[in-house]
Image 1 (tube, rainbow, N blue to C red):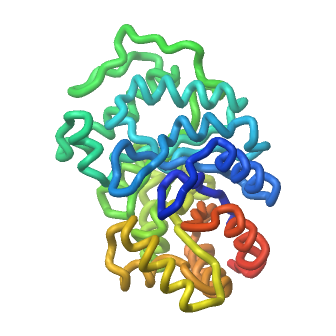
Image 2 (image 1 turned 30 degrees about the vertical axis):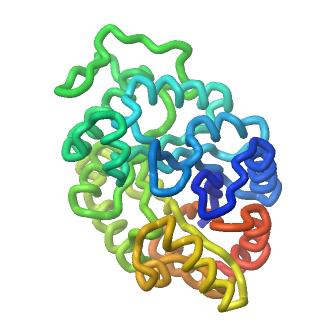
Length: 310
């Protein structure tokens, strides 16, 4: 298992939202040795959320050689043409370091904001993936669907990577979701606060069984775990305070559920959780500190990472 870091775009309370903070965070992640840097995406949310593609672009020069990732992009909400244009620019400007993970998004508010029917999100997602591939030149013929068409559209400049960045499909692990990953994806992105090591392991086994039918090699098909919100502290009272005052109000899940899924507390507990995910088959975990961002990245790298065993 290797590790990526989410950019601190979501406000768990007191996020400064300055360019200096973002660039210092990216530089520290690169300096520590993180393999990837990720930006998640919402237009509107229950707490402030800095725009993902803009933030990722802002730190390109400070990201070293890290893979850049979207975890996830919202091609349905943003529209596939606008999404393809922005991500092609990021891929080209980064020298071809981008991996694009896509999903419909879990917030109906994003759909209301752009006047789309939330109930159409899955059908639109399928078409948007085909549209991205077409717009990036991976397919020889234009895509023409019910919702989108790329006929007559030529985006230039093209991405740095031939045919565009790899497109991973996000799924929490449902049967329908895994079938979509196998059919349309170049990789699978799972969600840490929507799974457990046991659930992930079962889904990973099911997915590998589906890949061969689509001509894909299970042995080389990649996966990652995103939105692994964390806070390392040996002080149980501080862990309780961070959970109740920062995480629960922002994520809108029950405290008991979040305690069971998220590593808010001792480094040893976090390492045990990651080790269980590694044994279940997780290849990369994207961690996301909920407070004291840069110091928490350091604590993760110094105290948690060395104790993870597969």
